Image (cartoon, rainbow, N blue to C red):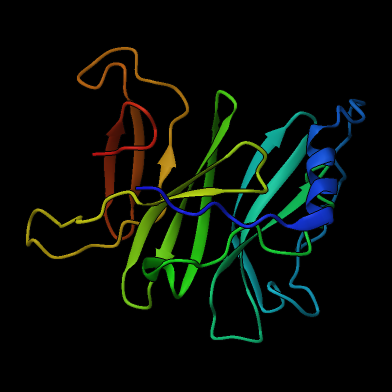
Length: 209
């Protein structure tokens, strides 16, 4: 299935992309005795003005990149995914626009709860697509953490085996290396679920079963 890529975010996105590629200052940073809480709060206005939560964090060179679920006080809790960067893991500066927004029917009520892993030169993000009734585990890929290509729901017709009812398939965590032995040798593993934890396997990180 071919889907639209995430929209480009203009000049400020280019600035953020340059920041992600910079070598930066590699001097050791001593952790403070007391970490201020919270480390990221809702903005006064905009897409993350109501709630910020359920983040994923990935290290890119010597900086920490956070992708987080955001909700605006100006709409009905529609989830979007924002991005913020830090050099010490404590003080973050955020991108002014979401890097992912709802585009398709299965995510019409929000894109939520990102989980990110880097394999090779590609970032793989599992996220929750919510249509107001069912939460479905979805997949997107990126080369720069800013522009994402959506691949749609990972498990389109997931049913609980015991009673054959449709289940929520959110919160997918992909292991970044293929298994070297056992029944799933040569495949990637992902754990996912809501009230139950399930396991998926894949040869290419895109197609799962």
